[in-house]
Image 1 (cartoon, rainbow, N blue to C red):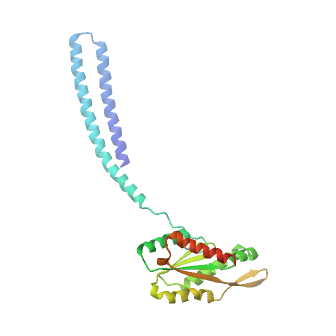
Image 2 (image 1 turned 30 degrees about the vertical axis):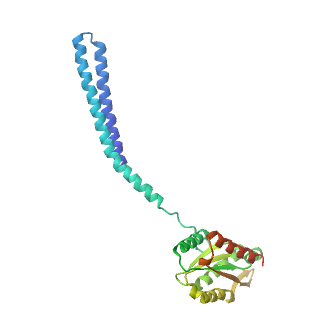
Image 3 (image 1 turned 90 degrees about the vertical axis):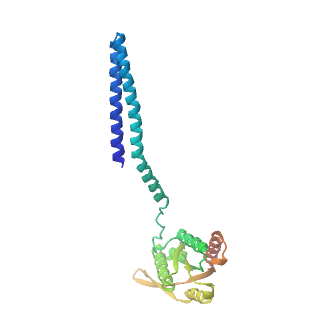
Length: 241
């Protein structure tokens, strides 16, 4: 399409140059003519040239309009496609889960749909102390272990996210009538013993991994800000333990 526009513009420029050359030729002849009859003849030629310029201008405008119309339509479609384009979702480098931004987006969408969803928050305890004592690689290993454990307990339709730091958030798509069973499942996380084996020099150390859960009913949690504040308050409380 751009090639067509370029070719059309080149053609218009060539036509304009031709008309200008004709005007310059008439101007030179006027300067060289001293007779009245000669001036009359050149006047007629000038009128013909001006008429040709008007016709050429109308032709050029129509031709350019025909060329630009599909280009405008194409640009409009491109802008529409660009406006509907979504940036790739932010993923956690360690677990491959969507990060907090993805969790908040999923919460808003579930809220708008009115879907029966329970929100489970899982805080992996003492990770900051493990990082300090054994290094961040060990802390990452603990989080990877916790992620695999949580994923094994959730249903296929549930969604698991890395909220922030040592915290995972899950959207459990279950109705209120299944709340007792859901609470039992979530609380079972805390009762399941987990251990991570860490190499220290020539030996190894087993580190117990504890996960503290909390469950919320999305329909009873108000706005996203209210829900996020509840989650962050719970996380801050666990961090003090």
